Image (cartoon, rainbow, N blue to C red; front, side):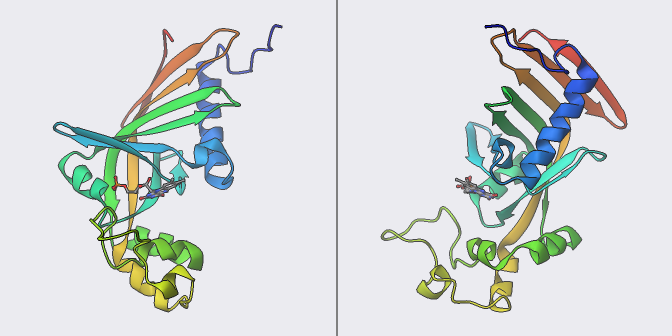
Length: 204
Ligand SMILES: Cc1cc2nc3c(=O)[nH]c(=O)nc-3n(C[C@H](O)[C@H](O)[C@H](O)COP(=O)(O)O)c2cc1C
């Protein structure tokens, strides 16, 4: 059976518009596949990816961000090599995005303040552990005290988590888009330098 070709199929400008639409859906809809991309960073002989929650996008400034724990291992990696990648896939849309950019670790600044104030009681739990994520444990553990595990803390008490909270922004250098469909694949690259955007088709 022949599938209908989407509007953007042979149109780079429409592909670009669709990319930002999908990112916006990913930001607003927690069930959308683009809500949880894989964030990949590396240095020397080390490379690693992990799921993160998309917390913000800015089409004009071409950046996006997620929240993290300043004590986590990825922070050490980003300090030696700030260039990182975000990988998205939406099965229904048949779209993969590979976003590459330079990261900025925001810590105790206006950006973190704004994001922390929007971080609800339940989500603050992630930042209330006494030890760094990934540190060795003597036995199975959530890393939290029983009270915190049971959400027995007030919003005021959760303020202590702010010292562990950071916002990792990625300023986008390029977006590679892949549309993998039975009707014929398409692949495109968008590169950003200053205010200019270069758009080109690639062989899938
Ligand atoms: C669905 C899902 C969402 C996650 N969201 C985040 C997130 O937004 N930020 C984050 O730092 N870790 C998040 N994690 C945990 C990371 O995948 C990872 O385990 C953690 O950040 C430690 O990574 P690191 O040791 O490489 O720093 C999430 C994990 C899952 C499964």
